[in-house]
Image (tube, rainbow, N blue to C red; front, top):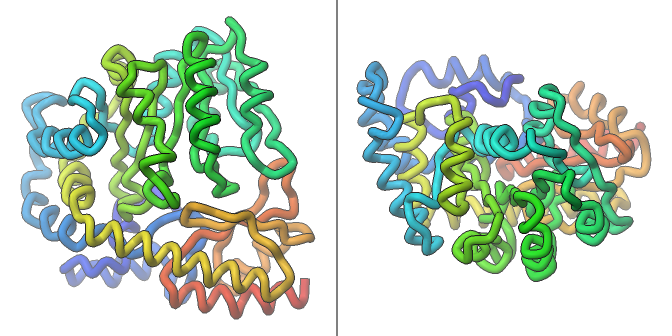
Length: 366
């Protein structure tokens, strides 16, 4: 299943079109439970869908230039106001992944890239294919990012340090004050990229973010996405926050023109506080359900602050994953160095009830 397929984001979001039910059945087979890509199945925001419907007919036309998107200015106004930034501190990209790739293209080719060994890494493979050395630092025994070890490895050969906070797939946030100190220490030597894809889902998003370092002019790039809490994974919108010079250098490597439909949905999702609260509450409710399922079979999950749960299943995780898939429930496994670990994304509550039944059945026989 291609998680980047445009229409998959709309599946059960009640988009008013008679074609949608047929497409939904094609994209997500009837009865299949997808707990694998860390999506928000309740999205996009109904208000965003309504606004997108109004402007779809304009999708036939290019703007006059890549910069001629009034709706992008509206989105930038909202983001800048929330984070005490200006427009020249911001870029928009096709998902945060494009922004991450662009930053690595702009800065990573002058040296090596340093990252945790277990983290989100789709963009890292891109620069590795171009010959950039990516050094991976093992996690600590408690699955936390080892900032001490990473800091000790940063020398003149390191151009970029990449961190996801909270980390994926562990779901663990990095201690905010320790991360700030790390960024200030490492920043004079290398660009620090902090991927905050799940920031809005943490217990204290305002304290956990590194945006204050951006305001202070540190050598830090913070990226965010509309694919998680905003429920827009199929519409591909992300953004970055950094000093103006970092924004300018990174934006040179962003290849696509902005997606006008996606920007419209992003803006109206961003300002829909009711939907954000609804989504956050559903994620937390779902996390409790999944944690109980795991506890019922004697497993102790990692204490997540995201829309997924990471757990040591005590046996070969790929065997469990395959058995679950045979019964129509998709979860993730296959993490290098962690062969017994599963990652379970939050779905709709009824999907998590199905997960409960199937997982207990699979664990009883594998």
